[in-house]
Structures are given as structure tokens and as C-alpha cells.
Image (cartoon, rainbow, N blue to C red; front, side, top):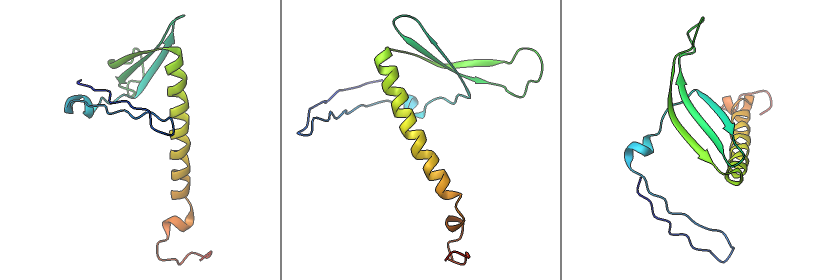
Length: 110
């Protein structure tokens, strides 16, 4: 991954990042399983693709990515994930409202 940090501090004190990546990295990896572990110094996130259709014995899988994070960055990641998950839930909740499914305005509440 090539990268350049053109960080500058704006008047409001917010930093802006300009991060570049190659197309293969941008494509990402599919994972349907994750494991979180930690030591005194870091957290490790291991992402894998597993076959959940196996009903007995060992479940086959392959690790697709493993990431080590400092405790401070782990906290920032958790906060960002909670924020994004909350926004996603709100959007999904709006989609489930009867008014959202009735674009013609024929619902009893219109």
C-alpha cells in the first residue's frame, strides 16, 4: 500500500488525512468470523472466513487478515464502530417504517 499523509491542522483543529491504496487492497477481504485477543501492550483482531454449514467436528476456515492495534487506537476504533452501527440501525429502522414502504402515500397515516 502506498501512502502519504498530507495532514494539516485546520482552523477548527481537525486533522485531514489523504490516504492512498492500491486496487487489490481497496477490494478488501470477506470475513464472517472475528477473534479479539490482547496482551499488556496491544490488541489483535483476527478476521477469518469459515464454513458455518459444517454441523459436526471442526469448522474449516482461513484467516484473511490479522491486525495489531495499540490500546488507544482500539478505543478509537470501538467508538467509531459504535457510532457507525448506531447510524446504520437508525437507517434500517426508518426503512422498516410503514411510511417508507409506501411511496404512493396510501398508508392510513397519510
